[in-house]
Length: 154
Image (cartoon, rainbow, N blue to C red; front, side):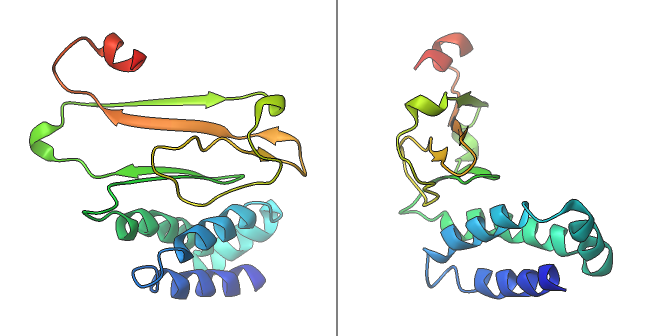
């Protein structure tokens, strides 16, 4: 029942993201922490109320709500979720290239998890409680000038 209650809370908070952008960070953190719940409990909540599906849909909705003309990129990494979204003009889109790098724990940039949205910043952080390093995910559009290999090296 707790998982289902948190799902209701996350859905209500998601409705307020347009007015308070920072809520998206908290929703992503809540969803990430929900993944630490015992698998059997999540399974029961999913069967009873589609709780896990609904939480994932809320995280997906964060990207839709966060992207605007002023904010065209969102990059967010937490302990269990990596979210990278950006606006693409269909006329300029020829492809997408994404890179995921995992840095060793000794090269992490912060001793505490930092899951706030960033634009063109390094999102690699270390989860201090477990000692795991997080992924650094970067995506960009690939245009038709130059080879794909040269696009990846930029």
